[in-house]
Amino acid sequence: MEYLRVRISKETAQIFQALRDVYEQAYGKPMTQAMIISKALDDISNLSRWDKVINNTSASIKTLKEITEKDLRIRVQLSPQMQETIQNYKYYLPQFAGTRSITLGVTLKFIFKGAMLVQNDSTLLDSESRDIGSILSDCESRLAELIAPTNKDTFESLFKELKHEILALKK
Image (tube, rainbow, N blue to C red; front, side, top):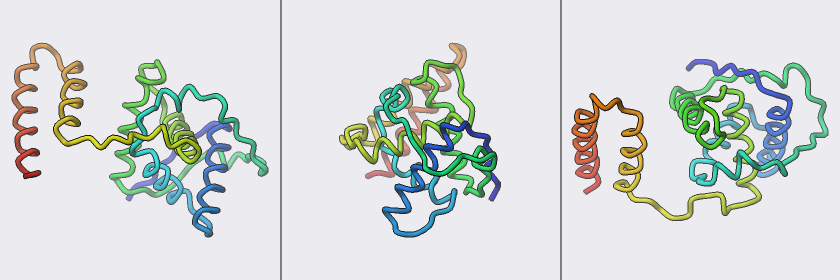
């Protein structure tokens, strides 16, 4: 496993500390940075209202503990799958923030903020269960926008084959 090393803002550190307090109170035991990040990723896995999370300014976090220089750095050992999930959010979230890209620190801020808001407002979660076909169709349309016109036929062919194989496994 590799280390995830990220420099975060004071606001992100405050949200992280508040999230730590919420999780420690819920589980009744101290939690490591890795446990908090893992739980936050789990909590936001069905989050569908990212625009509300990113644009929410009412979530002002007041911490009792002073933020130190050490609190502004996250250095934690995570599985490759968790690191890949965070990277996927890094590429997914800019569309809601109205930017071309965001840093890992900002990505974590949105993840932690989303996890905090989900604790208080379950309407942010996607309550309708989607089938594999609709998920693949959504992905296909989003990916088709990124493919160069010269590669479009090859992409459609490969994605159709992938979709067929996945749906065959489901049966």
